[in-house]
Length: 381
Image 1 (tube, rainbow, N blue to C red):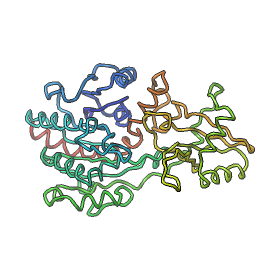
Image 2: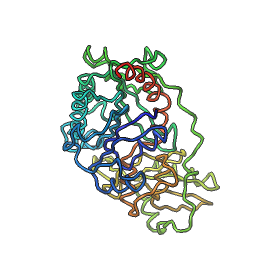
Image 3: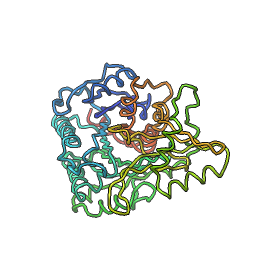
Image 4: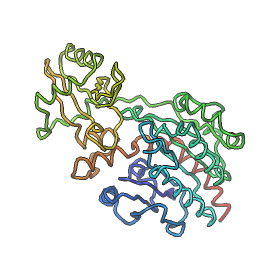
């Protein structure tokens, strides 16, 4: 039988896309009506429910799911956020998910696996207290758990490190081949190892270092995702000059190196606020030509949108990254329907989870844990 799942904070259904047709969705939820429209347009509305997760209860969730996936809001946990952590208005939505899982446990319908995905800032938020709280929540729900730090750059040309906490119900047998004695530096950052070591003894006892294969070798560069169509809108020469004027000496040197190489090269630019030599805040344009785009973010302001720079025969041109280019950076299929409005599409993608990362986890860890759960379910039946 197909393994089943619930998808919370579903956005446009990128976790569903990563799990693929081998998994069956029982229920999906998001609070944002614009994201909800995209979800329904791409996946249909049979399983989707729009609304506040705090207003859901276990009775709203059909059946018995093998997996519950929760990519809860990151704004209060992000290093660029306000520092409110799990007590913040946005990231505090996690507690709605926690209550739902407690309700399912009371109904004897606790999913075999939980996956919590968020920014790596969740590891150090509030000096590590928020990470401890997340682990404590999973422990109290009756799960053993472990975490992985995975950069989407292993799969797509986008720098996008994220935290994935994978929890398995403690009565589900776990194959020895899925657990390592020590962390693998490919999948566990120094910050994660430090946070794990700081957990209290009962939480460390429930911790598992998940074993994954080595990172795949990505064979796709950013230049291969570029839209070459005629209807892309390039900036005027004056706009491009203003962008270059915002660069530091280091970044202008990167640009000059690209010009000197000749041929055609593509890079990306983010505008960021930095301190100058006098301690004043100034906006800087930071460029990269390493074949990898910066991390997609939600477009709260113009500086959050990434700029594409093309260098060809000494000429420099610039434009906004298209929505379809951003979708490719998330590993979304070409046939995925994006919102017509640019900001809505960029917001949907910037808030999403990279599809190939979900697929990698599903194939190498989640599906194999489900195999262990089948025996438990058969015995219970």
